[in-house]
Image (tube, rainbow, N blue to C red; front, side):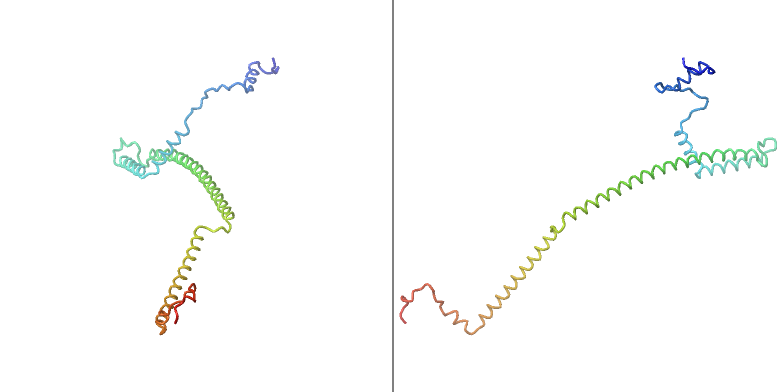
Length: 211
């Protein structure tokens, strides 16, 4: 049995049991009271929210005025807190001493929530920035791959311009032909030109009737 000569055997056994990591540690109930921090924090937030409301100020004002009025106008034998209202001052001091830590606790919880919200917003912004960078790189790669390829709008505009040019050329040809026809009709030899038969290149000159 391995134990120090100056050490009690039970102490050495307890030391070996504490050093054994393959066995769970037996928890013993302490003398300090246990409480739920989350529940206590919610209660402190409710109290701090009520203390910071107009209802609390109104109720406290009414209570203080009633207390002062009763201790001023009541008979001397039944005044619980005569002037200078030492007991009222003590109550207000106790109320302030409890209200300050509760308000600080509520502020700390709000600070923790703000910190978590800030971290979530920061992570969300980082994801959005990464997505925007990815989209920008994709758009740049698409532009590089397309290069000088004609888009649908470009081809459509070119076809429209070509069609407009062709239609304008056709209109100009129609105008020129109309002008030519009007010049031919208005000339004095137009009737002779129309009466003169057009020679047939396939006709035989030997079979032509004598003149």
